[in-house]
Length: 309
Image 1 (cartoon, rainbow, N blue to C red):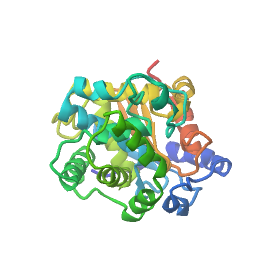
Image 2 (image 1 turned 180 degrees about the vertical axis):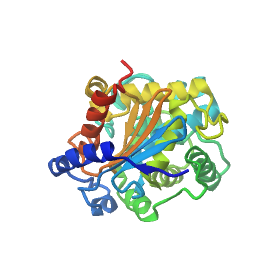
Image 3 (image 1 turned 90 degrees about the vertical axis):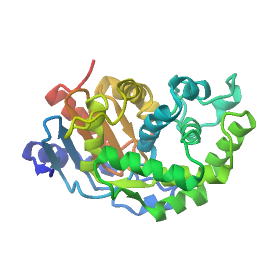
């Protein structure tokens, strides 16, 4: 299947592209600072197997925090709901995604939800496998299945760049290990997590993954069940309540769809029963979300009534 260019969508992209000048690319992971901040592309995958795009939709980018949704789906299949949420909470937070403060004040000392870094690290720690390599192979196989592309891999430069600078994430891991939230070797977990965040794809592939969630876990092309329905619903709920960092409430009001962003500038959007959306716009606002990508979604939801509320 291929995507077709869409004039209306291109018009919206052209309209919001200049907003990127108000944002800046992530530079705390050095490799991410090299991208062109003015890039903007979008693909929308419809349930009838039609896909439309605007911008250079084949531009690859790393998933970063978007991967948290996908790994949560895999961990829930591996371990079950009770196991996962005994160790990670379900509540939103107004704190930054990399905050350590709530770990220190919560009793028991567990992350508030799987979409903040502490929660995501704990969830990645739950993936089944006898070794880091076996866990990684299972993650790649799962993500490749969702994207319908077995060639899905990761950006080694970005992964290494993140691994070398992930001091705060290491601190989160050691704190949680002290409180028995996570187990095992911290450096192995960090290697797995940074590779997970560095998984790369284009807007079309991300939109297809969104379509799987839009159809409650069904493959949009074959109808095969890729994710159990109750797990797909849990993931979409977290996308609504926590998916856009500590701007999730404002995003729910202005756009109103399940979505997950990443500091690379990617956004995974889901319009239930209808569309999967993949966006790449690397210029970020002060919350870590794609500034042009959010504006694009605001216009789309007003024009086509995407909101689930």
